[in-house]
Image 1 (cartoon, rainbow, N blue to C red):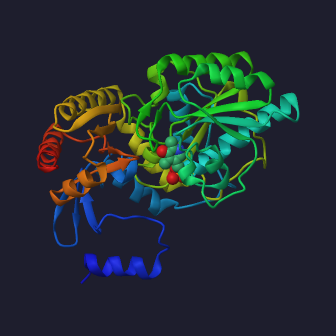
Image 2 (cartoon, rainbow, N blue to C red):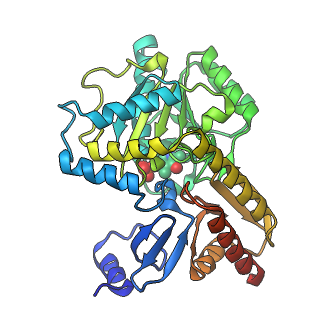
Length: 395
Ligand SMILES: *Cc1c(COP(=O)(O)O)cnc(C)c1O
């Protein structure tokens, strides 16, 4: 017999204690619902932090994954495989960029973006133009270089020194960027259209367009981190598409594999051949099972599906705004942040909602909702009812 207590004990005895976990061990899931070992059922508004795009054990996804695992589970990049080629084709056709490189995580995708930007600049302009600008309050990953790009001091403590050549500018401040670009040492600007870990904060369209124009003028690559916003999460396949942007580099991960580990970065016209043979690599990159999973996810994300994500996001937003103690609601599509009035803390709301069978997340001081993209209207209504009861009984 396995139970919550035994599983918790194994974790505390043998797993590095880097995570603050919920008091819950999960056993199995289907659709937007998941069960613990005591048979309690939970409605999921976390999707494994925006990764289980199609919820748990989607039939087509499961079929694609198991069929591929039975054929080739891994080949290394010394051989051609079909799932990776098809996935790259789909991503390129949908994004307007030219090529894809596959890896395993968001941080690894951003590492590749940084390497590409630096090499593009080096090949063309030589040394002294390697600085990567990102934004305050951003999140780009946990490796030493992507931490350097992450504009939140809370992640930095104790890990100095970082990779050189990273600076953080205030978000939505175009003058600050224009001023910083005057010294001519910048190769790329990297940003999230909606800052996820930073509290689900959307950048302004004017700012995004301004950044794009400044980058284009000075041949600086515009790198958009779509690790959390990508793959339908915001109601379009990529969030930048809602703002009419044309990035040079796009990083992806979270939602791409529907829960299997895969990351990717897409290379635009300018830098599609910047990385040549042996410039970059990743043993598991383009793993056929993960690519088959991603192909199954993307096969579902047609216009109708994405329009539904938008509609359900609006519905959720409207309902949240009408709840007691809610001060504001931020985000796009099914990537939603909720700010509470003073005296109500998001972590308390998360704990109380969990006790009533609804799983949610936080992002900084906000409640964050990232339901599977297949969430139904009834499930949204149920979550709202639970949050209402939680907020009504909060002080
Ligand atoms: C989660 C996240 C990352 C890091 O992804 P990992 O797969 O955890 O390395 C990078 N950028 C953004 C915007 C993210 O949300």
